[in-house]
Length: 403
Image (tube, rainbow, N blue to C red; front, side):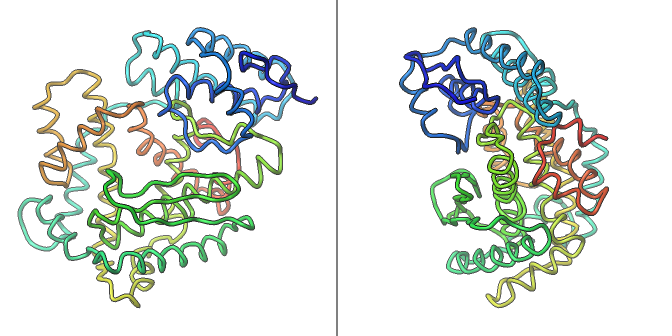
């Protein structure tokens, strides 16, 4: 059935499309907390309707979420689509309860919004990472000091960053096309920027186009540049967005995928996919392949050391999640600082900034999406030859990955 024009309050009670109603709810959520919604690439007329309508109250929006959830559960829909929409709506409803003042802990928010459990990861895993680094890094003594000294030898000169990025991006795109396939017309617009806090950031603009900004002001090592290219573009966030645009939004009319909502299961799978992107694309000799790619630019790339370093960094990924849990538990600041300095590899100044960034997240549970997403997506992706393609093309929820 066709969608009627929105009423004067911006709501369209005649809309019967699950996807269109979901987008309308999410855009209303964005008026309450703009930082919770990104990468909207749906119909522009919905933005006009929301912007031109009256402000929405939290309780009213919760009612709309409940109404749509009941409709999705009660009407005929593809099972995977129904499951995805209900999981997303459950996350949004929980986030609205928290926004309205309900006391919910970090672990409760994560489980109800992201669809998986989170808990403190024990020190044994981090000890394993440090032991691996101790064997791999040159010199003796403090692991963090040795890591930072080694990283200095791998930095890309700023004058060569653009050319190095172009080489890696083109090679990863070619391999991604050969291995997983890419929809026609997909494009990444790479930009070197300065003055930002992030190292890299991807914004999906719709129409199979992503803008990815790389912070050229920060010192970037060759292994880190490989990570940024794979995580943000090929076969990470950009590839996921354009594949789902082609196969699910355009191919199956599932408009609900045309937006990214933080307090939902969606980012858990998206970040998990991106965190195992290097491994999925390049396998065990990823560092050696990247070093060969950058050789024409004369870029230093110690691939023999970079491989165990990357493994150790993934083992250390839950440290920041643990810090977020400690902050939620109101652990004393000095204890958190000591804990971070014990396990993280950065210097004291950077560690302080990292803790502040976790504290300042508009949606703090997002911090755990990286390690938990990786823990779910990696076993799923390696269980079968085409499983990573499932992550790129299918409308999955965390429970699907545990099967």
